[in-house]
Amino acid sequence: MPRHGVLVTVLCAVLVGACGIVAPASQSTLSPAASGLHPSASSVPTASSVPTASPVPTTSHTSTPTPTPLATPTQEWSVPVHVSDVLFWHLASAADDAGHLHVIGATRLPGRGLFYLTNASGTWTEEEITQPAAEGTDDDPTIGIDAEGRIWVTFRRWSIYEECGLGCSRDPSRIEDRYVTAHADGGWLKPISFGLTKYSNDLSLALDEDAVVGGTFEAAYVVAVHGTPQVRYATNDSGEWQDTFVAEGYDPDLAIGSDGEPRIALDTANGATSGLLAARVDGEWEIDSIRMGEDFDFDVETLLVDSIDQPVVVFSRFEEDAGYRSYLWVRESFDNMGEYPLADCIVEQAYLGPADLGVTDSVHGLCSVFDTEARDGIWYARVLDGIESMTRISDSVRVVADGFDAAQTLVGDANGTPHVFYATPYDDVEALMYAVGPTP
Image (cartoon, rainbow, N blue to C red; front, side, top):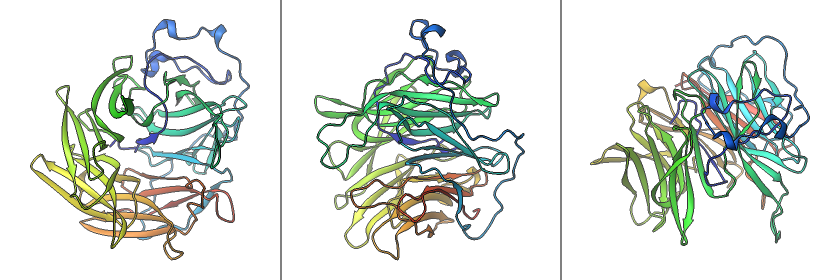
């Protein structure tokens, strides 16, 4: 897994190539060549064809940022603090090498774009960095930081967006495309289209942060072929999107190893009691079975890669005597596989601690629980030196009947210290909250 935790699952489109430039005229232009997207010349609109847009409203600070240290090691989780009055429905986060935190939030409100929050100046600041059409919205963000310290953000743009809940017979919403923008030279650049105008399910997108050319991305996604779901892999590292067939299945999660090679974990299409791990070796995909026994139905949640490129799969399953539990599946070699407990809940987000700790020493996860008042809230799960532990960070309500799960995101800094951001749409105050945990 990239060290800044850029893996996010998004629901959109099949990769088809071609780039166009849209977005606020007040922002600098993100050069396709500089970004690494390398669209063909015929696909890039001329300056006269780019629609004029109003400047993006911001609440950003104007003072010169000053570095802040990494979080002070503690033995307990901090009391959550209020960092924004904006109510977010999607969140993504990253930590840079100096320990500064960077958060992207999406409101899903008509005409509103993505918000960027950071503590790089020593205090929390926020600004709205994209601007969709008046009837549309920007959501489903990812965030990553490359080797040069540039911040990259991808997001899904809707040209028309309306909530379509229970009883909705026809959804009027329309996905426009998926876009990428970057923070460079002190400002946010105009978004560039990824060329994802056709829709698909289960796209897992990752920034290749050590790429020679910035803006190189890799993706795993699902298409249906004659009714059978197929996972495919795509990359734009050659300048144009190239994709290959991986395996039949769904719900892929993608990670890039230190060797630059992709790994994909996925659920199989022929039974819920097994999964697959695909690794590209010498240009070919090697497929390994993840099997936990016939008595359990399980779902792949997250794929991680440790410092020696060992794959670690976080999966969840329902057990009659214990409810939902999460485990780690580790392929130490093709002949040696291990299963390790992680948490008494479904861990959808996780990361590995610093490289020198090793996989069984430091694994960090985040999950929501909503079954009893005594357990409701946000929980942090950790395996440290082989010992499991769970800590409730907050009793914030995470879901309501027939409603959406509240947004939350987990990121680890260079010390392995966990940082959590979460929205509180169902509590007494609507806000974005932040808490920092103990350093391993």
